[in-house]
Length: 483
Image (cartoon, rainbow, N blue to C red; front, side):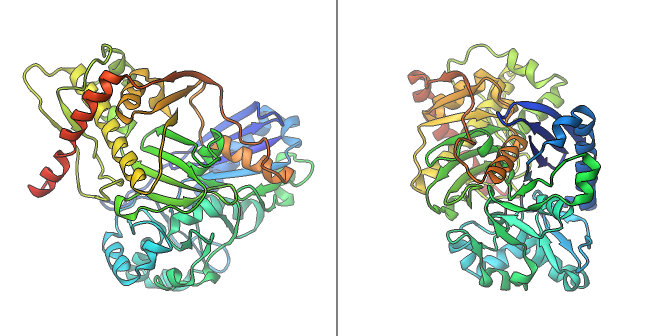
């Protein structure tokens, strides 16, 4: 048996798989986010541990005999969170989360002072990353900074509570901006830029390797017969890639979740910092990946559904078959944007609304706008030398065939739709736990069964290419006008 633990910002999910990767039991424990000031986003690290305890207690209640046979545990978690511990391993302050924007000033200063953030780190210095968060703490909370003995990412704090080990994996650690991503090792120069050393960092392991074993008292609590290994695991998107089998170079998926991700696996470090592409290590050895990230994918549809007092499913069900792009344009920048703009201040908007515009037209515009933003990601990936011909669709938005038809035709790629589109980080985490327990990645990361393959429609591809050209003019026009 194998456990996958996914530490999200809204909940912790635990799943229990057998040796054939069939689901035996699952449990979820909710979390809350604190926003003490505008633009801030924080969480209590101990709330992650409490949620993990609750979820694993629930697995024991559902399947005690199966839980007893666990041989490996894998971890997935939301990336970039700054978890600061003292020399006794106690949190010094709430974790500063991935969507916290307080460190924009520090980003500009760090990027100017240390060009290696772009060359070695391979990414623009954005407020979402961990390094500028620590620089903010250094400047604004110097007493806490001085007492900081270890800086961990969220899932790695859970690992510490599970095993007593300070360890992190390559994929998650690449999102700190302190990693030499090509070498898969900490960079002394990048650490020094924020007043830190290797002593502040956890040791690094591959996501499919063991980072330690479960503590004896926890084995007793959950009735596990022999201490299982705890795998290195991965950042949430790399773990999700392991869950859908996107581990071979060239394999790719599009995730239509709260945010949107265009993820491509690479055989080498391939950055495009000018296009705000994320270039990280993958969770499996000798492999890297690129991501184009948009901040509001299904979040845009959920927002519209809330305004119109309908469910997202009801809105998409009202759409006729798509025969052309919407006459209304939508910029999906509800909370700023990452790829390709790296703009925390830009906001969303509809353009071309008339007296005749109704719910269906607005819904169509939102689906188009998110697809256009994903095409921005594809363009940025192509500049980095990446070609994508086929995408696997996952996430809640992949339930809409209409949306996937728009994406397939606009991006001019085949979109494969799995039988089950719910491939969260917990599945990939459990698979990484299995790999660590067995000592091999062979045969672990299979691809899901496909329900349908959606091909680009030539007529739509042409009309959407024209509409995309018009849509791309909106962002610079808004910026030039001061919005």
